Image 1: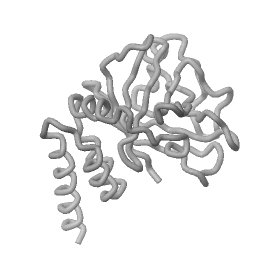
Image 2: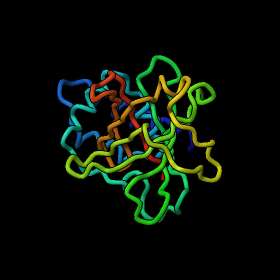
Image 3: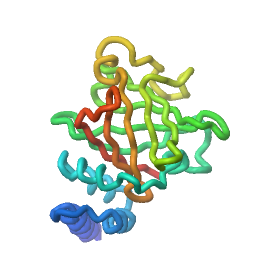
Image 4: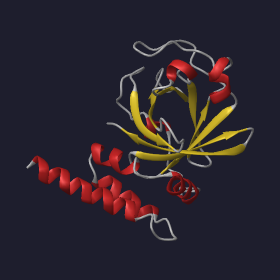
Amino acid sequence: MVEKSMETEGVAVDDFVKLFEGNVVDLDAIAVELDALDHAGRVAATRRLGKSAQARLFDAAAGRGGLSLLSIVPAGVPLRTAVRHHGKNTLPLFSKFEKRFCRPSPGSERLWGYNHQSLAWLTGPGYFLARADVPSGEIVIEYSDVPPETPDGWPRVRPNTSGMGRIVYGGMVDVLRRVSRHVTIGSAFKKGKSINSWFILCRED
């Protein structure tokens, strides 16, 4: 039974990847495939996407809207409790990571978060604040602002103003766009310009 389940999941992931073979990125078809998978399947599927596919997906999701802070940290999640978004970026090495978000207080207009990844010892945790851009229906992640204190169990808050943290995160803004109920596609910008770096995230419920 386990082997059959794994085989079925593999077929579903392959079907998802095939959606990127044509010239047109069909967001509705992509969302249907992702929503039909369980969490493990969604993570496996999204982590199969390379740089070209992620860049095309980000462009296709422009104007899609529909993202709010509740899309990132759903209602009912206790305050200051991490919601894990499993990701893959388009860097050549160490591309698997997580963004972890929490709601710091009732009705907060910004979420707290950081990057959980294997190079945190070098770059720092990459803390940020995230806000909803209502007109576009996107989420904006700003590394110039960090939480004023450290939630329990999280790495110590550090500003992104020195060392490798400044080089990697200094002046950076991420923009997230909606793909499906659990999945978002993001791109990084500095001084308002794309740095040709993308990432895809899958929220864990």
